[in-house]
Image (cartoon, rainbow over all chains, first blue to last red; front, side, top):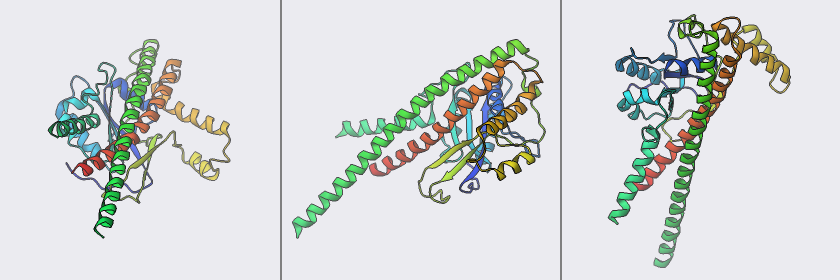
Length: 130
Length: 186
């Protein structure tokens, strides 16, 4: 994955979003929408016409931008690009998987919790071997 | 002499073992907090979506549409403040603390006024007026008169943002404790 220039300490960052229309609309109402001089936004609205490539490109773009501190991604969208999401290991921006209106949150697919599960699985295997 | 060395080694291994236990406890606590926050977030988002749907029902689908979103250059009034524990070094595994910064003024005039008044001296009424003004600017994307449900939805999503920032901080703790545990095991 491309590296990004580290944000200076005590700086402010944007909240980027890759989600369905209603979720994006809601968070834009809360004031997180940003449009830069080149008309680049900090969100991608995912609908039936959005391709996996577009989602992947948006994810890579947001995780390499210097001005993004958090990336919100609907879990069902993250599942479409699961390999890319799970291979992301940087602390900033933080990748947060959120539920969507039509797809409830499933802890089995959360990339943070899957690491927890892996840790407990390896512990139990190590315990059995003893 | 040999007995002294053995006692020192035992003491060191006890300390290491206690540290590992503490790391494991912190890890489990963080995971528990993470799950509770996710539950809370789901509930808040559900409320927000419901209010948004109600607003769409009363205002009409054409008025509450992402097509209306402005692509004119504007900065986000709500951002996140980052604070690295160890002066920005990413190589050391220190956690990053995030704090939500809501509704920063988009007007240069207001910004100057705010910088002159410190947070301690600004009256709650002025702060509340400022918040209402900034919220109103965003709502105006969808027209002059908006449904009260849309305003309610705005507040719900603001609450969701606060929860999300907490989740991000807990996530950071989980990943840090996870790294420490893997290191102990290795």
